[in-house]
Image 1 (cartoon, chains in turn cyan, brown):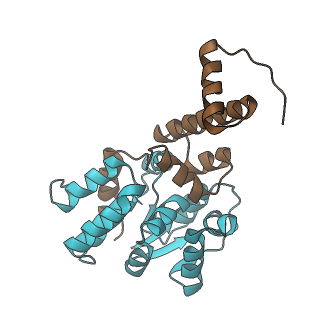
Image 2 (cartoon, rainbow over the protein chains, first blue to last red; image 1 turned 180 degrees about the vertical axis):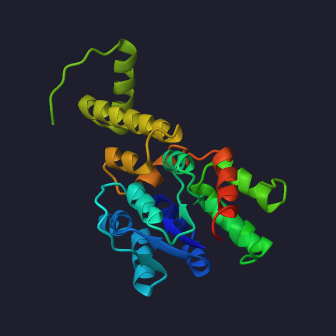
Length: 156
Length: 98
């Protein structure tokens, strides 16, 4: 799966300690603006240090573009619309409304874990652990939905 | 800083004094602190309702995104996506090129 990730999804996966697992299974790209928001503007924070290292290691690809915008979501959407990606990864309701309106596939953090489980990249125990690590960083509704998905209670 | 004059009810003045006494700070400082706390709570509610992005919240809180997320967590807001957003996410990935 090739995804464009926005800043809030990237930071939440980083805080939950799941970024490496996700970046191993999926090809994660970000626009330069997201790098600026997550690394350059917060270089003193541990999250920023880890994301910067992932970029340097090539686990996260920064796609240089000429897109002129001050919003990471706009940059992510326009990169997606340029083609070559399967989905946009985000955890922001406002951005999701926009993506749904445009019929753009999107992945919220907990669904990334569910998808990795469905694709056989994570065992059920690993998926449960990952979801537990994400729990403090996502909405209770998202957590509960993902739990049901993992248990087979929601077949969408 | 700008100087503003405002009328406070006795109840709100008591609240300012209460905070000032509890934290050993001047009334003016207590008032500024209460305003900040109230504004942050307002921003958290706007984010929870999906009316503001985390970026807009961070900008208004004058914090990096990561720290704004932690501040929202302290206010009890861990995210703003609903069950419907989550289900639609899984469905949309199934329909994508993967």
